[in-house]
Length: 305
Image (tube, rainbow, N blue to C red; front, side, top):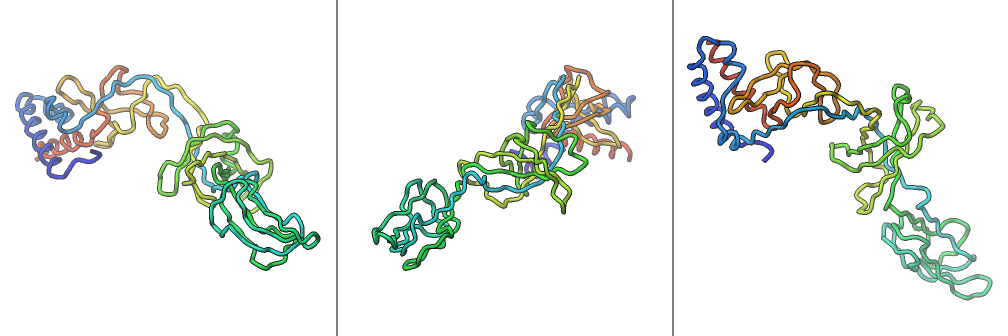
């Protein structure tokens, strides 16, 4: 479970406080030290879903955030016209219906031969426009427009401050407006032209869309990996808490959990570089570390009174 129920959280904090008070009684001559660590037995740690990781070197993916919209690939659009002028005898495809390649769309009687011929879909996809009516005389205008949505283009706006960093081939993670993950892809092309009104350059990302959940016109956010940096020591962002004006992690030493104040460096979406305050090989709490923070702050408040 992602979040502990309120009554379970209260019970766990009460257990932590009891353990911490016992620890304080044993070390009453070390008032300040007692408030920077707590003792939790293995069973309680499991109940609290305290998960740990051993920290070491890592690779940080430095990103820039761009926004853009999904578009139909122009190469996946078919405009279906009458081959010969004539009278439309039947129409067999409705607007916003899905058709297969070679499926019959309409039948037309040629003005010249008075013979009927069939208009068929050249590609599979969605009929997004239909300008064919029973009894209508055909002209040069498209009678049907069909689009294949199984692969889309996403065009991202790259402004001046990002132009030097964004390159063709860089990895991209796409998200919807509500933060939902959409796809992993890469930058396929950068436009040689700037958009006059926005003064941005378009970066194109080609996105497979087999289930057609991504729709043309949809706004998207993209994290573009512009640099990969090797760091001697990283910790998960989920391990870091802000306590008493400092960034800390909680190092596990047996059944004790010690707050370690950190000097932090660069970060990416998941990890942050540690410049000081922790050694490689340390085991730190990576999940539910806020419980230990709450316990220590509660213990510190009781000491202050």
